[in-house]
Length: 264
Ligand code: PEP
Image 1 (cartoon, rainbow, N blue to C red):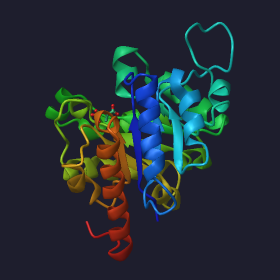
Image 2 (tube, protein in one colour):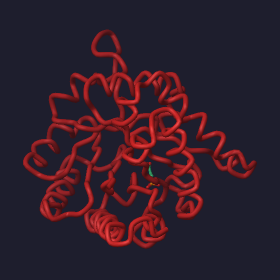
Image 3 (cartoon, protein in one colour):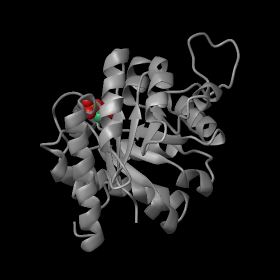
């Protein structure tokens, strides 16, 4: 049974004391009884401080990006070896802001996923379409191609180590949420692509999340779908209370799926 996971992407938000405060609050509430897994991805410059706070907690530390190179003349980049020093376990790769604002290509993202796996990080591989693509009824085809490009030349064992996040770009930070039904449809399609490139068993083990304006007042509708394994959360991850509500909604959904498997 896949365990639900809620991942906070703090993006370029919070100053040091705000980030520390948030990490302390989450650490105080997330424990071995928490039914969903939890991860936070602070800015690179706060990884050291947040890593110290989260030591001994049940919260995973993630990074928001990573170079595909290990060292060298790459001004401004962060190497996977540097992330290792701070107990980072996960790395967001291919976020739409990296694709759109920093022109990262499918090839860059594929290279980063391979580097992340080489260094034993869990890649949180993001994919998702723009509004015009959805309106042209091409969302499935577009996301399928993004996924195929991202996992190109990965072995089955490597595919199994991914977390995939379906994040329709038109829903990120806009307040527009993709309906649970629509998100589930794309997520099922992604699971099918993974099945074709690995095996039924592996595709049933890979977690696929939804991201895009997730909030505590809309997440219940999303997380009830059995193929949706959690959320990648931007804005709502910056407030402890709100983020913890999402963690508890995911935990409830996990409990329900155990008592009524594949109900939706
Ligand atoms: C994100 O950037 O990954 C995201 C989902 O942002 P938001 O929750 O703010 O839409």
